Length: 560
Ligand SMILES: Nc1ncnc2c1ncn2[C@@H]1O[C@H](COP(=O)(O)OP(=O)(O)OP(=O)(O)O)[C@@H](O)[C@H]1O
Image (cartoon, rainbow, N blue to C red; front, side, top):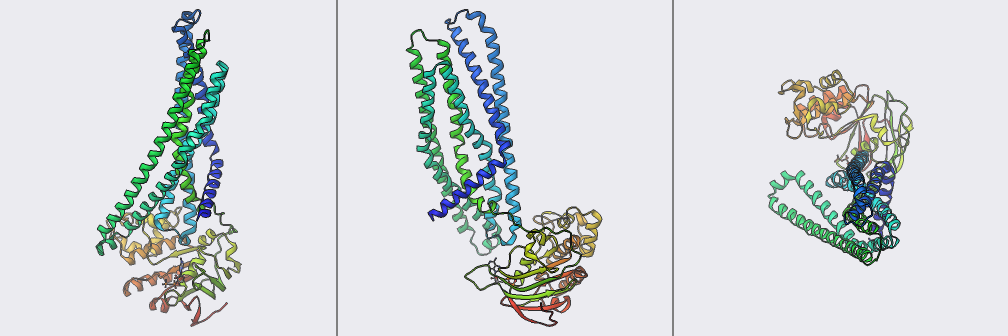
């Protein structure tokens, strides 16, 4: 347990380091602007110290020297404000760049893993949304602020040492004490923040899961019990958030104390210095806030680092996984021959393999119906052909070439998939079809809609193909939704078609119509169809019975 948590922290560190390198240019801009703002503040402080000393009548020829210095101080102060604003904007931009990059990476990895990803829906949503969001502050606030918390106080110490070496030394000592004050309170902050994040993830995962199953909760009259459980989880989050705030408040108090002490020491030194330079004394006193300002920003941004550590630990297993390797297709093959030879696939070492030495061949342009009882391994065959899983033994060949040598995404490029219940996005029917090939022309989308006979029922909808469907849109029947999926497959126009129970849940009449369209779709393409349906077996093509992950029998067998 302890070593796995240490492993997670290491992985989080590796991920943060890798991403910091990738985003270096974005992070260095606010640092550069912050250094420039500090230099402007030092100049302003020096001029203000001279003016104050002159005002107190202690500088020779004060009245004559006052106006140009006042103008220069005002100009430098204005420059400092402008640089500060530019720094703020650059920090926001760095955070945004980090968010965009990490969200794209996370999303791409989750999409590539597809159904093979073992994470729950809630967890996956939390990775893309909350976890990535938590890293925004790390790159936008923490990294620039932490770098400036090192550089800016060093510049202030150098300026103070130039004016009065002993004041410089005092500031240096305060700077050295600061990490101890932070460490005393920061260790607690790390744990509190990690726990807060864990409970936030639990709450959001549970909420999403229950929202998806809302009709089931209502049917079983469990809504009150669930609301109570969600309330308890929310309460746990509240307690943990308060703990984080308490610790953050403590670290702020430690810093204020240190700042007051440094101010008192410098004031005491210059107050008791007979015949000392009043400008230097005032300058050093005025430098104390400038010295502590970057450290205060550092303390305020510290929780960003803690939140990022938790988020990076959750994202690391996904983002540090090496990119799936493999060959790219030179060109789209016009025809596809699929051969399985003694293929074995296990999802779980403790359970019997899903495919156990399965062999078959599907010729170019042929349709093969995979039949067999539930759990026989039909869907597993399709998942292998889509590159979501890899066989642990045996060989899968596409046109005689080892399919596992190809990059998994390339396998998906040559195939179209239709499942039992196609997902309709909240968009028009037209957009739902175009989703399969975004670059398709309007004429191609309409041709696909006609081929799949979507156009037939679309004619009766309020806005035809432009009718909004999906969540909150026009409801479609199972058969109509399946026609949209067929239209997507027509539009993709790939040489291989993979179908998983495409006529499940349809009445015999609708099923017969969908099979007519399937026959049209499969014409000239290689098709593999997992189906329990007697009608599909009778009409679609050669049937291969599988059972327990191996061939049980085949009516017109073409074995590998
Ligand atoms: N993601 C998974 N993790 C673990 N085991 C799995 C997973 N998917 C499938 N299995 C197991 O693999 C075996 C084959 O499942 P598969 O879905 O391929 O069967 P099927 O013939 O398509 O079944 P059905 O007709 O019910 O869809 C089953 O024992 C199933 O429990």
